[in-house]
Length: 86
Figure (cartoon, rainbow, N blue to C red):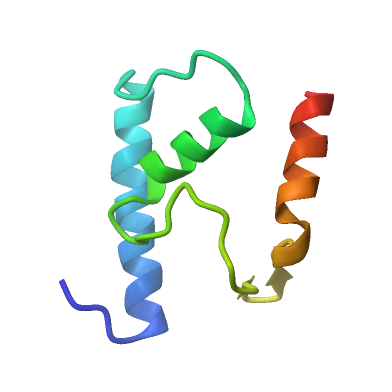
């Protein structure tokens, strides 16, 4: 399926995420531990149908609406700190 607009991307992302989340609830994805590696695997599982970079740290800045995502240069250190605390 070719996506040609932001609106189409939003719809496709919502559908793909919903289908994967339903499968997740039916134990299709096993969450054995809560680590950075497992979190990246979960991200890949949920978004693999839409984004080729799913599960990897991104290398571009992102915003969605008025929400600004963590800046690229801080992703690794913030994630490491967060998962150490958890």
